[in-house]
Image 1 (cartoon, rainbow, N blue to C red):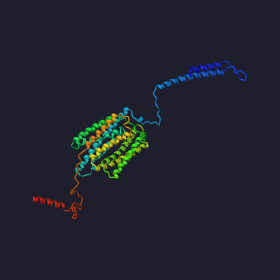
Image 2 (tube, one colour):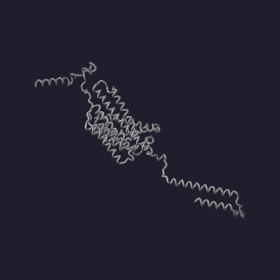
Image 3 (tube, one colour):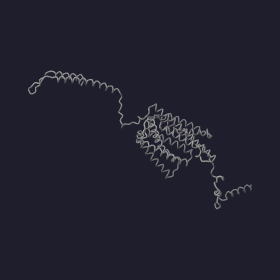
Image 4 (cartoon, helix red, strand yellow):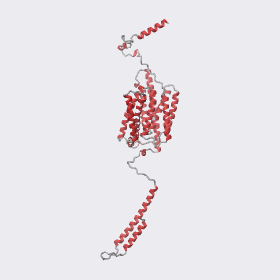
Length: 428
């Protein structure tokens, strides 16, 4: 009812109450209006005015609300991981910081590898002390630790699908350092491979996903129980068991089998390293994340996957040449890291199709560049250990072991060969 009609109705009622009315009640007439009735009428008029004013206020408020866009309430059961995305300015800042840390870490790793290589070369030339007694070798180990720590920190600022392909920077820097400082010969494949790797790195940095996410314990738990990651985990476990059966039980010692085992473990390493690094970064900058059990679960996964990955990689280095292991390991590791970042951390969500195509094209150029650089690398010349120098024999009781025993077939064979050669020369 409109407030004016309500007011008029109330006024009519008050006027009727103020007039003397006669109602038959048992044949008697009702008394006239008293002071109580007048007070009641005045009260009703005040209530009518107050109701009209409140209705006017509420009507205006409703109109203002209708002009504003509707915002759904933020409830606890409708938690959205997109709320953990950084703002645009902060996202670009963290993105660039992660790239710089990763590049510096890879350069330090390449410097450390060349220092250790130089220590091995010098030890092979001198042949006096083991390599682990050299201070230069230990300095290379320390630099490698610092470089790996930088790569670990970079996962907390930039997407995992970008940090993993940047490992080609280490291969490029190692080739340059070996040519400049170790005086190795530069080849045409080094120049072509370096150019392709640098072009691929530029495409990776340009077209990679720039969105940065606050890695928190709740976010990692949310990603860990998602259906697409559980399906990915099931497929990886089944594939790993099949490959391990072929490698251990059937004795299939192919390089692809061993490198696939390393790559499957590397995907868990990338997921856990980014989770641990991100939660440590979030604990330092914003809120403590080390009190949640998921942090320690990811820490255990990181240590275990790294240990078994190094074990299989060392077995591959013993069975195959380094020129085969290095490029294949880089390709498989990068591919597994990109797939893990896409599936677990949803890093390609909302990325344009052109960016995805150019990013994959940059990965392909980096793969080809690393393959060309690592192909047929010169090996370290080590001392021939077929013969034992006489001055290195520790005691007199071992001197009789140099010559074969008289009862063996090889006894006297060298002397007979020398006598035959002398006889042939005399006949000539």
